[in-house]
Length: 249
Ligand SMILES: Nc1ncnc2c1ncn2[C@@H]1O[C@H](COP(=O)(O)OP(=O)(O)O)[C@@H](O)[C@H]1O
Ligand SMILES: [Mg+2]
Image 1 (spheres, protein in one colour):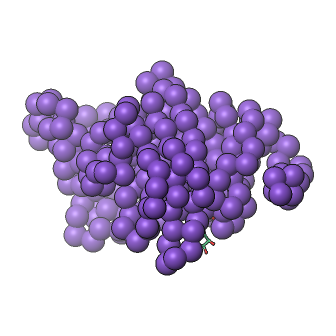
Image 2 (cartoon, protein in one colour):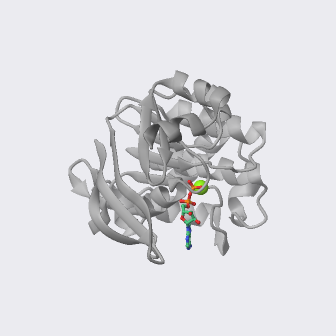
């Protein structure tokens, strides 16, 4: 189970997350929506372990372990996966090399025998074929010169290979075109299972046409102010955020 408890975080002395709470059971898909500046990306960054945030209290638990006590790499091998709106570019490192070392770290941590190069090549071929990813793309440096759609494809490939327990996707405000949205949604839907959960952060309802969430949360001013099912996202589309925010005040 993934559980965020009373999380308070600030950046440059400005408090962004204010007693934030969220509980995600295995197999569930939660969507977090909210106006710009409500702290959605901050939440994802804090979970990822980005250094610039000051965490004054709270915990981010995955199966009873507080991820905040761990280095980012250890969070990943324990089953946390984050997909960002703007994936990092790593010049000089081919996507394939990056994927191989990420996968090796996971196997090592879980006491599994490391794949040989031919085994890895076979696995990556299988997975990339299922996602329409070309051999050429995975030989290129990670994300460098990738189009938006290619970055997303690569991210979904990573997610598929690493088989995380909890995936947090920050798709806020991104200028993703409809094909890229579908790609992300297909990846999520393919990976949905009883053991795996997702937190999908999105500014627009559109993505939720393709990924049907079990719960929808509205976030404003650093915390969740309303929770509902997928109909909440549809209502939001009609009314906008203000109705909910005013109600909260
Ligand atoms: N590096 C930063 N320095 C100062 N303030 C920041 C920084 N990053 C984010 N913020 C502020 O934190 C608040 C929340 O931002 P963010 O988490 O990106 O919101 P959202 O993703 O919901 O739009 C905003 O008021 C933003 O201006
Ligand atoms: Mg954001």
